[in-house]
Image 1: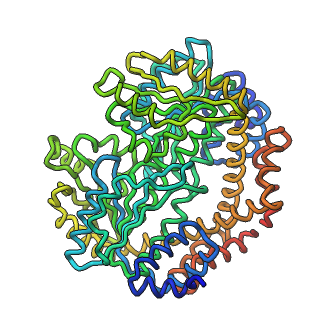
Image 2 (image 1 turned 90 degrees about the vertical axis):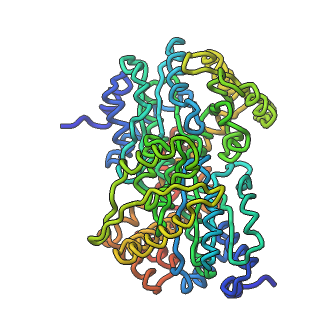
Image 3 (image 1 turned 90 degrees about the horizontal axis):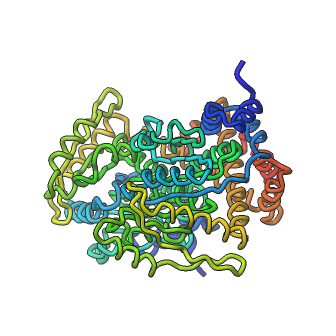
Length: 317
Length: 317
């Protein structure tokens, strides 16, 4: 008999990596026990410092994540990593790629690393990420790092709701217009110019400082720092870890942490509600309801709104 | 009195750019007349060749789009362009950036260009893009180009459902692993190595050819061509336009066009249904329903699933 959700949650809380991995798979695949798992996890969640890391391809996100994990471990923190990679909608799996570099943490039982596939239905990311986060949080991770590519609205939204968001740039690549286009200037609490040994790093730092605006929370102001790192040599990573601690302290004082957690929770509830309805729509007429109304739209008998109404009514909504 | 949706649709079909722009704004903002507009557009849609263009930042998407527009215009086709840019979730607008380059087509009344913001609620892209596409299609565009950044699941999904999808790469940048990570190898019907005058272009072409797999439709096989262009000098764009015509002809013969249109329609209906439910959930208790259940989740009284159930029940679903 497979272990019950409660048993898995107990084992995950006791630090069993296999139980953690299994729970994440179960929530990611939206298995039948998702609800039970969520209920078993909820009382133990809410303690972790949720850190979002984002940046364009090539700025050194994985190297930075790995270096930050080492630094946090040296400070005695347990760390969870959720790497949200765009993956193929067809092959259906997240490619390993530079995840391999995380191999140096493979034998450390204070670190959990998980690549999330972003495949699947509408709002896949918004749906699965909070669930996987809750697993790592309940399993006792002090810090959970969510690493995403900083392009694409859903990724930006998720990372922007972390307790602290780190935006990574590299000299030359991270010029202002590109960063502004990707919408990542507004979401960063801490900015890091990685590969700071390259030409142009100082100019990038200066440009960034000019473009940034202060954050406010309950009368307290947060001035996003712009740090320089060479993650491949672990240079500047201690300052990044310090900045994260400072931001966390500010967030708690200013009420910003509370505000973001409330917004994360709102969005999760909304996403679950929509997913429930999607699942119900998919079951109409033994799974053929959507096909049936689609044919009527293609035949010009219904417009898409009328088709959606019909489907929703049949789904009991 | 503002013009009725039917009147705007008639004017758009007569080629009035102002009416086209107004209709797209109305559908993008999900205004109250969305449904009426959709019904008025539907009988006139379904004729355009929908072409997706995607690629990482910096491969020259906008330049290529602009060059392709010129080539298609020289062939006597009317063209619509939907540029789907990641935009700020905070400032709420698509930045102009390199859209400016499209200025050369500004005086051509056979071209409609529109930047779409990807801001907004869950599934924003999946929701607004088919609506805007329908406007351009019904307005009589022979070809509608949808340009997106090829990173991020929702963008990949949308472009992958175009009648024909062009994946752009640049030498050095477009190496295999990055392209495979972004999930764009599987969705391309035509591959273009732009900036082909740079070092390494031939190697990129060769690598791509090795990684590509054939497509099949109803017994007919499509071998995705790998073309070389220098879009900034309009080199190779005629071959791209030819390849698009060939792919369209193949798609019609093989049933692939029909299959993709059916899938696009399915997803649109699903997205509309979910959006309807989201809107209803947002109205529960005069707009305070989601806040109320969120507070109960934060207080540990409800788990997120139970909260979503409560909200859905109150939303009459």
